[in-house]
Length: 496
Image: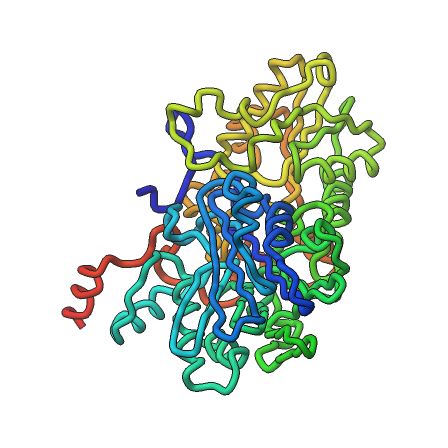
């Protein structure tokens, strides 16, 4: 098992893409209409947030004894579901999930939503984020007899909600009390027998918003999912807020909210993860990327003939660079739209074409020209050097690389699979060193002090750039397949 879930190509070099853990979608139709197809289209809009697995769980609130019907599988949303499966998922309340694994291996057992049957009824849960105290919480549950079916931190959350429900008056109270035990990043959607609940961690690492369509309420990761199903945006779930959808409308519990100065949104939602047409906490992702490109043009100008972006997240930044510099923007890459942001369960034997499977260069656009290439990040450098070579092979006379984020210097523990420091190309290297490695004529990164401006002054997490995290990071690398085997737990206990 590859601990940090790196993708490898035919040269056994880690693939250089960043990945976000997942996307969540929940809907409650108060008129009692079936909602499985709406969840399907919502997940389709969130496919960029995770392409390893997907699932849907629904229930019929009109039934006296509510049952949860679910279906999940490995791969893309349209590979897992068809009209026959969606037709079989009868219910007016449900949640859906798309996943990329940063904690727990990529297996069907770890696919979400998780469904629990317990003494108070049923619970379906979908989670986006990463807990830094999941190991500790899991061991505590195991010591009291809990048996786990997965290796993901989301199951720890589900267990704690179920246990708290035995002591609270309502399921939303149970969600709140369980969340008080969690440290790290989480945006949750939870379906109980007759309630849809959303919860966002007090720092607001991961996005979560509320929408409405006719007499249906939706809680989801991004506004683009609302647009896809014809819903209107109501508002964002506040960091630390627990919202509950019932037949009486929206209820809000803000008892866990922190002062806004303590919030720490993941800046990479604006730079890379979120879809360009989404808004997060009132800020347009598209506008943020345009700003990043303009800042690059101001801070790292260079003479060239065209500006181009590496699809998809580099395109808007490239347009911003063009707008600020006056250098024409021209698409120079053709992206294979049938390949997601990452290959699904790749094997070395199927990766001979490497970068070219995902991208091809338009020779007519770059031949004989000085090219400015805008990308969102350089992690290990294994992709950037190949794209630079592709541009040169297509006839570019110069290739100037501009990156719409600062250099990665530290790992992330909150749901982004930035690897250990030693595997980051910027670790112990100067920008000139990196330029030589990727083979560019020049290289420029976004200045660190520009980051808050991308989020229009909202408080953000900059830990992966500065090593200063909004809460104390774990001493051990908890990412990947980090949960101890049973014998390891026993050994630890015997040594206490």
